[in-house]
Image (cartoon, rainbow, N blue to C red; front, side, top):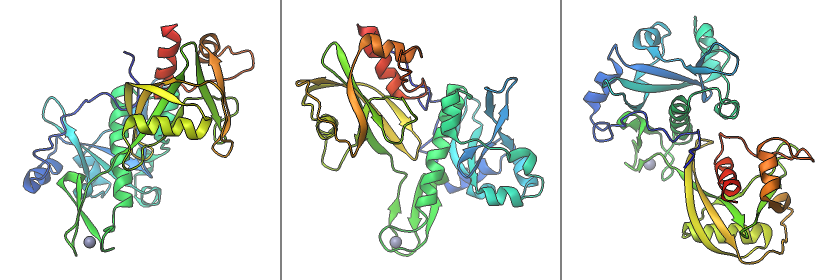
Length: 311
Ligand SMILES: [Zn+2]
Protein backbone atom coordinates (compact mmCIF):
# COMPACT_ATOMS: atom_id res chain seq x y z
CA UNK A 1 0.00 0.00 0.00
CA UNK A 2 1.31 3.48 -0.80
CA UNK A 3 1.97 5.52 2.31
CA UNK A 4 1.32 9.19 2.92
CA UNK A 5 4.55 11.15 3.20
CA UNK A 6 3.59 12.99 6.36
CA UNK A 7 4.39 11.29 9.62
CA UNK A 8 4.35 7.57 8.96
CA UNK A 9 8.02 6.74 9.32
CA UNK A 10 8.88 5.88 12.87
CA UNK A 11 12.51 6.77 12.86
CA UNK A 12 13.24 7.15 16.57
CA UNK A 13 12.62 5.00 19.61
CA UNK A 14 10.37 7.21 21.76
CA UNK A 15 11.67 5.47 24.91
CA UNK A 16 8.38 6.13 26.69
CA UNK A 17 9.36 3.98 29.69
CA UNK A 18 12.42 6.14 30.36
CA UNK A 19 10.83 9.55 29.85
CA UNK A 20 9.48 9.86 33.43
CA UNK A 21 13.02 9.42 34.85
CA UNK A 22 13.93 13.07 35.45
CA UNK A 23 17.62 12.33 36.11
CA UNK A 24 17.89 10.34 32.87
CA UNK A 25 16.14 13.08 30.92
CA UNK A 26 18.45 15.76 32.38
CA UNK A 27 21.47 13.67 31.45
CA UNK A 28 20.19 13.37 27.85
CA UNK A 29 19.63 17.12 27.63
CA UNK A 30 23.17 17.77 28.92
CA UNK A 31 24.78 15.14 26.68
CA UNK A 32 27.15 16.62 24.09
CA UNK A 33 26.04 14.02 21.53
CA UNK A 34 22.33 14.99 21.72
CA UNK A 35 20.74 16.82 18.78
CA UNK A 36 18.25 19.67 18.87
CA UNK A 37 15.71 20.74 16.26
CA UNK A 38 14.54 24.34 16.48
CA UNK A 39 10.97 25.42 15.77
CA UNK A 40 10.46 29.15 15.26
CA UNK A 41 6.77 29.93 15.73
CA UNK A 42 6.33 26.17 15.11
CA UNK A 43 8.19 26.35 11.77
CA UNK A 44 11.09 23.87 11.62
CA UNK A 45 14.52 25.31 10.92
CA UNK A 46 16.01 23.46 7.95
CA UNK A 47 19.22 23.55 5.93
CA UNK A 48 18.58 24.09 2.23
CA UNK A 49 19.62 21.27 -0.10
CA UNK A 50 21.40 21.57 -3.44
CA UNK A 51 18.24 22.72 -5.22
CA UNK A 52 15.43 25.01 -4.11
CA UNK A 53 13.01 22.17 -3.44
CA UNK A 54 15.07 20.05 -1.08
CA UNK A 55 16.33 20.44 2.44
CA UNK A 56 16.81 18.68 5.73
CA UNK A 57 16.23 19.39 9.39
CA UNK A 58 19.07 21.48 10.77
CA UNK A 59 20.09 19.60 13.93
CA UNK A 60 22.02 21.73 16.40
CA UNK A 61 24.49 20.39 18.95
CA UNK A 62 24.33 21.20 22.64
CA UNK A 63 27.29 23.52 22.12
CA UNK A 64 25.40 25.49 19.49
CA UNK A 65 22.34 25.66 21.73
CA UNK A 66 24.46 26.99 24.60
CA UNK A 67 26.24 29.49 22.35
CA UNK A 68 22.83 30.90 21.42
CA UNK A 69 21.83 30.98 25.11
CA UNK A 70 18.77 28.80 24.40
CA UNK A 71 17.43 26.79 27.31
CA UNK A 72 17.89 23.05 26.75
CA UNK A 73 15.89 22.43 29.95
CA UNK A 74 12.74 23.24 27.94
CA UNK A 75 13.66 20.83 25.13
CA UNK A 76 10.95 18.36 24.08
CA UNK A 77 12.17 14.77 23.84
CA UNK A 78 11.50 13.14 20.46
CA UNK A 79 13.39 9.86 20.88
CA UNK A 80 16.63 7.92 20.55
CA UNK A 81 18.23 6.94 17.25
CA UNK A 82 19.86 3.55 16.59
CA UNK A 83 23.08 4.76 18.24
CA UNK A 84 21.19 5.78 21.37
CA UNK A 85 21.60 9.48 20.62
CA UNK A 86 18.78 11.64 22.02
CA UNK A 87 16.84 13.98 19.74
CA UNK A 88 14.99 17.00 21.05
CA UNK A 89 12.96 19.94 19.78
CA UNK A 90 13.12 23.45 21.18
CA UNK A 91 10.16 25.67 20.31
CA UNK A 92 10.86 29.40 20.38
CA UNK A 93 8.97 32.44 19.17
CA UNK A 94 9.97 34.45 16.15
CA UNK A 95 10.37 37.38 18.55
CA UNK A 96 12.99 35.45 20.56
CA UNK A 97 14.74 34.30 17.37
CA UNK A 98 15.08 37.91 16.26
CA UNK A 99 16.28 39.01 19.70
CA UNK A 100 18.91 36.27 20.07
CA UNK A 101 22.38 37.49 19.07
CA UNK A 102 23.84 35.35 16.30
CA UNK A 103 20.60 33.44 15.75
CA UNK A 104 19.62 34.99 12.43
CA UNK A 105 22.07 32.85 10.44
CA UNK A 106 20.58 29.72 12.05
CA UNK A 107 16.89 30.48 12.17
CA UNK A 108 15.81 32.54 9.23
CA UNK A 109 13.90 32.13 7.11
CA UNK A 110 11.80 29.34 8.58
CA UNK A 111 9.02 27.97 6.35
CA UNK A 112 5.85 26.46 7.80
CA UNK A 113 5.64 22.68 7.79
CA UNK A 114 2.49 22.48 5.68
CA UNK A 115 4.21 24.38 2.86
CA UNK A 116 7.29 22.16 3.18
CA UNK A 117 5.02 19.10 2.96
CA UNK A 118 3.15 20.41 -0.08
CA UNK A 119 6.41 21.16 -1.87
CA UNK A 120 7.94 17.80 -0.89
CA UNK A 121 11.04 19.53 0.48
CA UNK A 122 11.89 17.11 3.31
CA UNK A 123 12.43 13.36 3.26
CA UNK A 124 9.52 11.37 4.77
CA UNK A 125 11.68 10.73 7.86
CA UNK A 126 12.42 14.42 8.43
CA UNK A 127 8.84 15.37 7.64
CA UNK A 128 7.66 12.86 10.23
CA UNK A 129 10.02 14.13 12.94
CA UNK A 130 9.16 17.74 12.22
CA UNK A 131 5.46 16.82 12.41
CA UNK A 132 5.94 15.10 15.77
CA UNK A 133 7.81 18.16 17.08
CA UNK A 134 5.28 20.61 15.69
CA UNK A 135 2.27 18.81 17.16
CA UNK A 136 3.93 18.53 20.58
CA UNK A 137 5.13 22.15 20.48
CA UNK A 138 1.64 23.38 19.65
CA UNK A 139 0.11 21.32 22.44
CA UNK A 140 2.48 22.93 24.98
CA UNK A 141 1.52 26.39 23.70
CA UNK A 142 -2.10 25.60 24.48
CA UNK A 143 -1.62 23.69 27.75
CA UNK A 144 0.25 26.20 29.87
CA UNK A 145 -2.71 26.60 32.21
CA UNK A 146 -4.67 23.87 33.96
CA UNK A 147 -8.06 23.23 32.35
CA UNK A 148 -9.48 22.38 35.76
CA UNK A 149 -8.35 25.22 38.05
CA UNK A 150 -6.62 27.70 35.72
CA UNK A 151 -3.24 27.64 37.50
CA UNK A 152 0.05 27.25 35.69
CA UNK A 153 1.15 23.77 34.60
CA UNK A 154 4.72 22.49 34.36
CA UNK A 155 6.15 20.16 31.68
CA UNK A 156 7.26 16.69 32.79
CA UNK A 157 8.54 13.50 31.11
CA UNK A 158 10.52 15.31 28.46
CA UNK A 159 7.41 17.22 27.40
CA UNK A 160 4.97 14.26 27.24
CA UNK A 161 2.99 15.31 30.33
CA UNK A 162 2.11 18.52 32.11
CA UNK A 163 1.20 18.77 35.76
CA UNK A 164 -0.72 21.51 37.55
CA UNK A 165 1.26 22.85 40.52
CA UNK A 166 -1.93 23.90 42.36
CA UNK A 167 -4.47 21.04 42.04
CA UNK A 168 -2.22 18.21 40.86
CA UNK A 169 -4.20 17.52 37.65
CA UNK A 170 -2.17 15.83 34.92
CA UNK A 171 -2.48 16.67 31.23
CA UNK A 172 -1.25 14.65 28.28
CA UNK A 173 -0.63 15.57 24.62
CA UNK A 174 -3.88 15.09 22.75
CA UNK A 175 -4.57 13.77 19.28
CA UNK A 176 -7.82 14.71 17.54
CA UNK A 177 -9.27 11.92 15.34
CA UNK A 178 -10.64 12.96 11.95
CA UNK A 179 -12.39 10.70 9.45
CA UNK A 180 -11.54 11.32 5.81
CA UNK A 181 -13.48 9.21 3.35
CA UNK A 182 -13.73 8.40 -0.29
CA UNK A 183 -17.43 7.91 -0.97
CA UNK A 184 -18.00 5.58 -3.93
CA UNK A 185 -20.91 3.92 -5.70
CA UNK A 186 -18.49 1.42 -7.25
CA UNK A 187 -17.80 3.37 -10.45
CA UNK A 188 -17.71 6.98 -9.29
CA UNK A 189 -16.65 8.90 -6.19
CA UNK A 190 -17.80 12.08 -4.48
CA UNK A 191 -15.33 14.96 -4.23
CA UNK A 192 -16.01 18.37 -2.77
CA UNK A 193 -14.71 21.90 -3.15
CA UNK A 194 -14.61 23.75 0.16
CA UNK A 195 -14.85 27.53 0.37
CA UNK A 196 -11.30 27.71 1.82
CA UNK A 197 -9.67 25.62 -0.96
CA UNK A 198 -7.60 27.12 -3.72
CA UNK A 199 -9.67 27.58 -6.87
CA UNK A 200 -10.57 24.37 -8.71
CA UNK A 201 -9.25 21.93 -6.11
CA UNK A 202 -11.56 19.07 -5.16
CA UNK A 203 -10.93 16.62 -2.34
CA UNK A 204 -12.52 13.86 -0.30
CA UNK A 205 -14.97 14.64 2.51
CA UNK A 206 -13.64 14.84 6.07
CA UNK A 207 -14.77 15.70 9.58
CA UNK A 208 -13.92 15.36 13.26
CA UNK A 209 -15.13 12.34 15.20
CA UNK A 210 -17.43 13.48 18.00
CA UNK A 211 -17.63 12.07 21.51
CA UNK A 212 -19.54 8.82 21.66
CA UNK A 213 -19.00 8.00 17.98
CA UNK A 214 -17.08 5.16 16.38
CA UNK A 215 -15.33 5.60 13.04
CA UNK A 216 -18.18 4.12 10.99
CA UNK A 217 -20.78 6.35 12.64
CA UNK A 218 -18.70 9.48 12.10
CA UNK A 219 -18.23 8.62 8.40
CA UNK A 220 -21.98 8.03 7.89
CA UNK A 221 -22.96 11.18 9.81
CA UNK A 222 -20.49 13.49 8.02
CA UNK A 223 -21.36 12.18 4.56
CA UNK A 224 -25.08 12.43 5.35
CA UNK A 225 -24.81 15.98 6.70
CA UNK A 226 -22.68 17.32 3.88
CA UNK A 227 -24.11 15.52 0.84
CA UNK A 228 -27.37 13.78 1.83
CA UNK A 229 -25.89 10.45 0.71
CA UNK A 230 -26.63 7.35 2.80
CA UNK A 231 -23.50 5.25 3.45
CA UNK A 232 -23.57 1.52 4.12
CA UNK A 233 -20.31 -0.39 4.45
CA UNK A 234 -17.27 1.54 5.71
CA UNK A 235 -13.76 0.13 5.22
CA UNK A 236 -10.63 1.39 6.92
CA UNK A 237 -7.86 2.03 4.38
CA UNK A 238 -4.91 3.99 5.87
CA UNK A 239 -4.16 6.68 8.41
CA UNK A 240 -1.90 9.69 8.65
CA UNK A 241 -0.80 11.96 11.50
CA UNK A 242 -1.68 15.53 10.52
CA UNK A 243 0.16 17.97 12.80
CA UNK A 244 -2.03 21.03 12.07
CA UNK A 245 -2.43 21.21 14.99
CA UNK A 246 -2.46 17.58 16.19
CA UNK A 247 -4.94 15.40 14.31
CA UNK A 248 -4.93 11.81 13.15
CA UNK A 249 -6.55 11.40 9.74
CA UNK A 250 -8.36 8.03 9.49
CA UNK A 251 -8.78 7.25 5.81
CA UNK A 252 -11.83 5.15 4.86
CA UNK A 253 -13.69 3.91 1.81
CA UNK A 254 -17.42 4.61 2.24
CA UNK A 255 -19.86 2.65 0.09
CA UNK A 256 -22.84 4.78 -0.96
CA UNK A 257 -26.34 3.27 -0.85
CA UNK A 258 -27.94 6.30 -2.53
CA UNK A 259 -26.72 8.61 -5.31
CA UNK A 260 -28.83 11.77 -5.13
CA UNK A 261 -26.72 14.66 -3.81
CA UNK A 262 -28.12 17.37 -1.54
CA UNK A 263 -25.05 19.50 -0.87
CA UNK A 264 -24.79 21.52 2.36
CA UNK A 265 -23.63 24.79 0.82
CA UNK A 266 -22.77 26.30 4.22
CA UNK A 267 -20.05 23.63 4.59
CA UNK A 268 -19.14 23.03 0.95
CA UNK A 269 -18.91 25.29 -2.10
CA UNK A 270 -19.65 22.29 -4.33
CA UNK A 271 -19.72 18.49 -4.31
CA UNK A 272 -20.42 16.08 -7.14
CA UNK A 273 -19.74 12.63 -8.52
CA UNK A 274 -16.49 12.07 -10.44
CA UNK A 275 -15.65 9.16 -12.78
CA UNK A 276 -12.37 7.26 -12.42
CA UNK A 277 -11.16 8.78 -15.69
CA UNK A 278 -11.85 12.27 -14.39
CA UNK A 279 -10.04 11.61 -11.10
CA UNK A 280 -7.09 10.14 -13.00
CA UNK A 281 -6.91 13.30 -15.12
CA UNK A 282 -6.97 15.46 -11.96
CA UNK A 283 -4.16 13.44 -10.34
CA UNK A 284 -2.12 13.83 -13.52
CA UNK A 285 -2.88 17.57 -13.79
CA UNK A 286 -4.56 17.26 -17.19
CA UNK A 287 -8.24 17.77 -16.36
CA UNK A 288 -9.93 19.67 -19.25
CA UNK A 289 -11.47 22.20 -16.82
CA UNK A 290 -8.25 22.57 -14.81
CA UNK A 291 -9.64 20.79 -11.73
CA UNK A 292 -6.97 19.53 -9.33
CA UNK A 293 -6.70 17.09 -6.41
CA UNK A 294 -4.54 17.19 -3.24
CA UNK A 295 -0.87 16.30 -3.69
CA UNK A 296 1.07 13.32 -2.41
CA UNK A 297 1.62 14.87 1.02
CA UNK A 298 -2.08 14.32 1.83
CA UNK A 299 -3.92 11.09 2.62
CA UNK A 300 -6.72 12.21 0.25
CA UNK A 301 -4.23 11.58 -2.56
CA UNK A 302 -3.69 8.00 -1.29
CA UNK A 303 -7.46 7.37 -1.25
CA UNK A 304 -7.89 8.81 -4.74
CA UNK A 305 -5.02 6.82 -6.23
CA UNK A 306 -6.44 3.66 -4.64
CA UNK A 307 -9.83 4.42 -6.24
CA UNK A 308 -8.27 5.04 -9.67
CA UNK A 309 -6.04 1.95 -9.52
CA UNK A 310 -8.98 -0.27 -8.53
CA UNK A 311 -10.81 0.47 -11.80
ZN1 LIG B 1 -5.10 22.74 38.35
